[in-house]
Length: 180
Length: 280
Image (tube, rainbow over all chains, first blue to last red; front, side, top):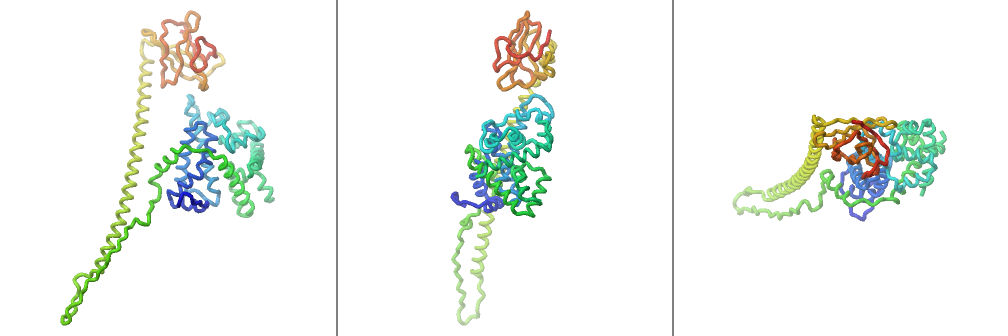
């Protein structure tokens, strides 16, 4: 496998399943920039974001046997791992910085929206920022901050059904905006 | 079920972005089995998301890649190159066993062909074993290095905790010193939940403050302690990031202590809101 050789997704998956270093290197070279974008959208601190990226690629490599190509494409799977790890990092960092020893859930509710996430809107987050307010807040809270629809309904004091339908509408609009 | 309606309901986007509930995912997977156009819709959106992120890729510090290759080194499959096994083409020379014509055919003492083949086989096996053991040794060496690194980082952690414990031990000694005057500072009206305590050494007049429960200050703000002397507030120092007790300024005389929230670095006179107040 030379540097200039382009692999299909199936070939890359195969190389990774065979635990080949060249496969991992190819994966990193071609996807780390895109993955770093979602992490940087969520983790403010640049150094911490790089640490999270490192952690994410270790996770991807070590849990690769769990990847099911019939359920999602490779990038989709990696993107979700990255998003979840970034959100967990931000939450645990904010909790550790707080001097109050309260329950994590209580802390998270009270600090929703104010937890320091990246205000530098890049990539997808930039697009989300152009949605109308009631859509924007739902995508922000669910996608970039990791709150469940149930939690969002409680936080915004709106019915769960409204959250569901509005979020769906927001995502449909998002799709039209990123369509190439 | 109206497939187009289902595709346009937002479930596809929810699923791809990882926002769908387990029930919704299960239903989607069932629908995908029945209607191939749904699978296509999913893939289209996945590609659009991927393209968006690739277009907006962010440069990564080079350190990350080298760290990863180092961390995962022992987990990569060994690379067997084509010239790993040396060319062991040995010249096989048959031993000429032609006996003198009149004597019966003599059985050769050594079957050189067989011997050479066996020797070559042994050599190949030995070479393979060498490669195997070399790789195993290399892996062990790497794992050993990794362990050493882990141990030294654990050691560093231990040292950090030891220092913290020492600080806390000293704090406790100070607080329990009989020459300490304990000044409780309850919350002022409107600031319920905030408390702090001043420990005032009546022999040395050194002042220490313990943050029992003050609301976390914003990044650009800092708590400041004041000694109230003859009705006037005197700066007693800033509350920093102390393990337990913060050592403040030396105060020879005071009738009360108070804490206000000032800008980072503090002010000469109190400008900010008062949080707690304790009268002597």
